[in-house]
Image 1 (tube, rainbow, N blue to C red):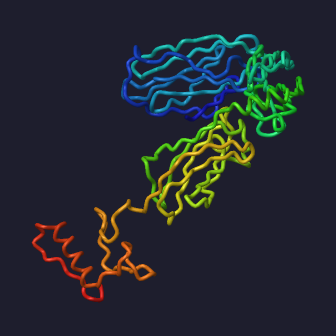
Image 2: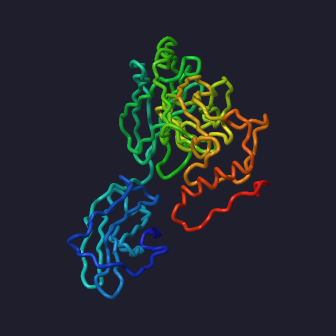
Length: 395
């Protein structure tokens, strides 16, 4: 959606487009929307609306009033519109917002409202209190003050990824961080609180706390985390060269993204091959449940058999397993007979030991051609065509 910016009574980028299909005013959404709970002098305040659609041969239009300053934003084909207004010193205390949709043949009002306007962001304040461990949860209370600011609380373990909470209103909030790291990776835990103008600016440190979680508690909580590995599209077998969609949970929360979950395949003989390394969370961002999801390949040429697929956190060592049956590409078929849907092989290749796959001497080419002719006759009984029989050379 295109945006118009208003400074005082000046409109930038405002234009009109032809509206789409008519919409009865009674069915229209008359709400005015804004992501901002207050306005600040010199910072954009956004307002948007929906459903202002033409009911005639001309375009629909919208008039928006900010404390009596009227502007006309662009109206999109679907009747939606959006505009940014930058309050001035004259708007301090209260900004009255109203809007009207003109459908070309009639008009109807949106629901207006008042919003508080601050002269400038207040000085941010904040504190971290009540830091404690409750079972396997690390908790604290964050108290913030100073309107017009955004506040950010962070819990950073010694290893792994920090977790952050954002607040856009001064208030008192509780934070909770699940203990899934062993003490050797968790301690010390650093808590910090910062504040910055909501419209942008350098953060101001407000408070910080360093905390040591008892080692026995941290280790017990880490050991209690359940670990899983799921095969999402596995139907009982997979062929070499195919892929599998996998998902797992319970790996370090967070497992360092640079050292994610390793997927390995262990064969019947004990041989091991690494199939992939998958990050924790979407696009490498750690998730609270230590989850991963991704696609892994089964190497082409993998011999048929039962294999063990293992997912292991490269730092935590947490691991889960699933049994996987690998079959020959194209499915299991009897030697010497083509599978349904496959083209017959006209030039048999004898095994290197001079024996057929059944353990007997390989059949003579003419005998093999006879088998193939019989199969073709059974497969195409009504074709009316006599299938060609391979010559003695197999060509």
